[in-house]
Amino acid sequence: MRELVPDTRPMLRRRAAIFSLGTSLIVSMIVACAAAEQPVGPRLVLLYATCSLNRDFLGPYRPADASIPPVHTPNLDRFAEHSAVLRRHQTESGQSGTSFASIFTGLQAPDHQIYAHPRRLPPDLAVIGGRFQRAGYESYSWLGHVMAGAILGYARGVPEENRHGKRLLADDPEFIAILDTLAEDHSARAFIMTNFTVTHGPYRGHDLDGYYERHRNACEVRKSKEFPRLRKLYSEEHRNFSWEFEATADRLGLTPGDRELLSEIVALQYAADVEYLDELFGEVLAAIEALGLTDESVIVFTTDHGEVPVRDGLPFRWTHGMQLAPDVLTVATMISAPDAGIQPGAYENVTRSIDILPTLLSLSKIPFSALPGVNLAPALRGETTPPKLTAYSHTALVPEHFQKSIDRYPTLQGRFPDISTDHMWVGLRRGDDFFQLAPSTETRELEASLFDFKRDKGKLHDRFDAAEPTHQAAIQDLRAYRKKLADRYRSPGGPPFEPSNETTSNDPAADDISADEKERRLRALGYIE
Image (cartoon, rainbow, N blue to C red; front, side):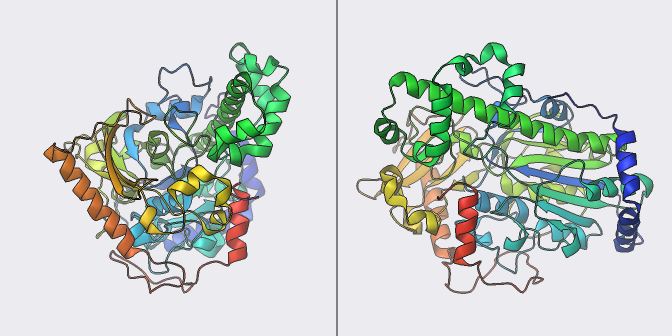
């Protein structure tokens, strides 16, 4: 892996010249869409949203924790130097469809209706690409995530010819042409959104040989004669290891030493995938920098949810959904907007996935209303005191095709015995305090708890005090939130969706995707065989 530098102009120019006809077409489209008098704003807005990313593996967030393998993220490190680094950014859920819906619509499940994936966004919802398109930007989408792609409504408002069902790559001819247009025509403006995953389980260990060469002194596990066997076992049994580790390890006859080696191997494969993600992001940044567009750009790096490593106290590992774990809900988010006055450095207050949309609209000088999230731009510029926000999160519903085989995973089934909002867990974060309300697996009665999300990532120490008024007030807030989730849920084939926020009816497709298509998408991400 190389550390990327921005001086790639000659390469990009040569590639762009090959596609001169396409470039001319895009120039005409962008110019035609631009209004005669536009408010001054960024000419390029990039929302780069990846998936299943444990932020502790990234340089800007890495803790002093020897249990995390060595990871080299020079591009994210460099990006962080010029960005607001949100230190307590919380996502809605540990399930991709739900959390991408929160980012792209600025709403949570009672309004965006993605309680389980894969499901199509209701046709009345305004989605981020459409908002930018209507404001005079030419919108483009590279949505490679199978749970949050164009067919499911996540690219709504983006012109059909500008939609791509794959991740954004720096050498994509259309991306090169867009950047060339922006460099040559200062009246042009473009909004680009991408989502994808290279860090979702089962972890592949991208360029594992190269990873070992870079970190040879810290990768003694590769020398073990058990390395090939255990790596193969992880590939074959990753679902069982994630949802029922101890029972699976017992069935396979793994010794305590095997289990420790397996954990090291899986962590290294994940670390190698994170380095690959850093390279992909760095190449996109280098392309933007090479054409001198960085200062006139707003770039957000974020993720739908995190990923759980091996944690004492947590029932599941090497996965994300179905547990309100700190590693899952607290996600990496960084915002760079030099011309908009965003101050680089750590932003310590709680922020939420629903705040990304209003913040991006504000930074782009696009008027908006009726969004529940907060515009963070004034606080990120140092103009106002950072708001003290409450972040609400919840477990998603078990996808129906996964539910069909849930009896293989007794621990999971004990928590979520059927597809019902009755079993949802809810939580709220204020500072580092995380209040949780969840059904007991024995009695099904709701139980309250309180954990420190910064210092207690395994949720081992419950600090809830029923006699403390502020604790009781937080639990009452959670009861109201949980009731709203249940009351607004529309099951497949249920009553019509009734949005409570600003909407636009620009997509006639109202039916959910087929059962076969749902199964294909779940299988693509390794949920089912």
